[in-house]
Length: 194
Image (cartoon, rainbow, N blue to C red; front, side):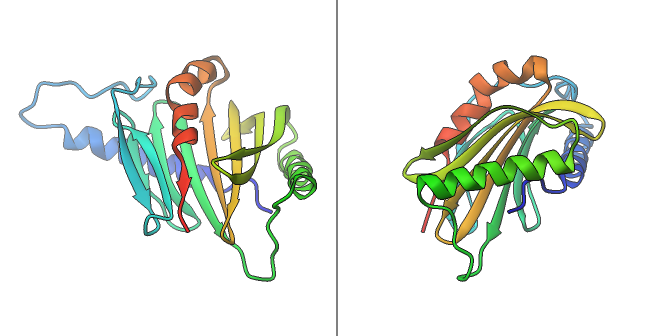
């Protein structure tokens, strides 16, 4: 089971989108763009859907949203905070975890894979969860991404032969605030269609 996708690609895509947004704002307007180094508080949410309505969630309107290229579905970002949502279709021969023992085995495998990939990886907590009746595994950890220590919550949702992964990244000192205002509300709004 994959755990970490090419985060550098997602971060690069987000940086390009933010740069283009800043350049697009140049012209007759006198409204300054928001600082790229500061996390913007949500000023509302909008319902969005991807993959033919297979993935739906509420996105903060003050954050940039950039569609991705498979397996990356979409990135949302503001300053150093980022949400990346991935979809990994599974073949009919691959059985997704569905009961507690299978989910716990997946949880242990995800921790082992992350630790093998990043020697600085440190688990804060991990759990088998089920949001909206969808079996899921959640890891909360500290990781080094592009040389920067980030707190990351990675939630793996299993439904209809797909593994959806919602990765939420922020600097340690900002994680709790952005989790309360953006990360947790977005994660709780995720709905996976049939």
